[in-house]
Image (cartoon, rainbow, N blue to C red; front, side):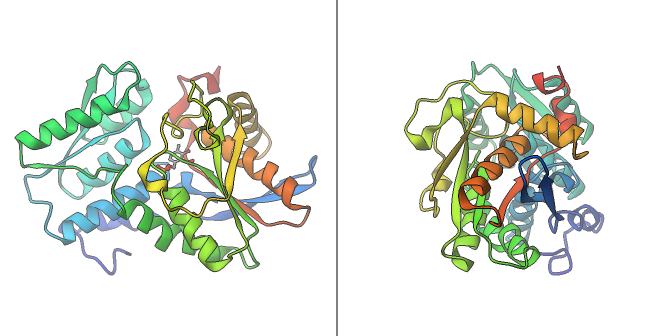
Length: 312
Ligand SMILES: Cc1ncc(COP(=O)(O)O)c(C=O)c1O
């Protein structure tokens, strides 16, 4: 839905809404390998990640259906990009935003959320995401002002990628698409874009990028990895029914090396999952043959990884 189709309650929100989505598609020519893959630049969304799309679709839908009142508080448990996106858009739309994050969340994420005018509550989790999800549900049960986007179960997450990101990709690539690969967090992107491409090109291979250390779809046990934003240690509900043809494993060190290549050779200041996605896309293109058309996504910007091993 474009801001011209939907007028937000406060006119000022139309400006930021107009910048979300319709991101550029670029070819990445890997001269050494003799391979070109195509990457959609989701880091160009205004808060710097693909999660701006989720914030837009869920908040615009909630407002248009009267689920958001003037005193509503948008509440979500998130490890980063979704929190930043909801903080950016929720406050621009005139609502209070409260983000629950584990104490392990990086300083730059915390600073961005607070700078965008949202409230941040840190919880002790020992790595368990469910702790924060339970906390948000308890808070909502006690106070009806809370509105929960519920990114892990909200089917709008998939529908939006099916109707916007997926269709944009089909429009932007003039020839048939042979393969699409991306990682999964909530699974919304992979399920939505994967379905759009499979519907249009039934022979296209739809693949999940998985950290080699946590290849759950391959039936392996999750272990720690450093590809932030993907593979939280479980297979998300939203991937059920997605037209997946398989998985491509990328190790943390491969992801890191490719991210640095994208930064130093191509000039793209992107995060680690973008490197992992491109690494998986190259593997898929190698398998599908020299002239194959393989598409992936550059999910977010590097600035939110200053304190991580990516910058060491
Ligand atoms: C940083 C980052 N955020 C989000 C996503 C996509 O997440 P989701 O599965 O929640 O749509 C990815 C996917 O690769 C990612 O790398």
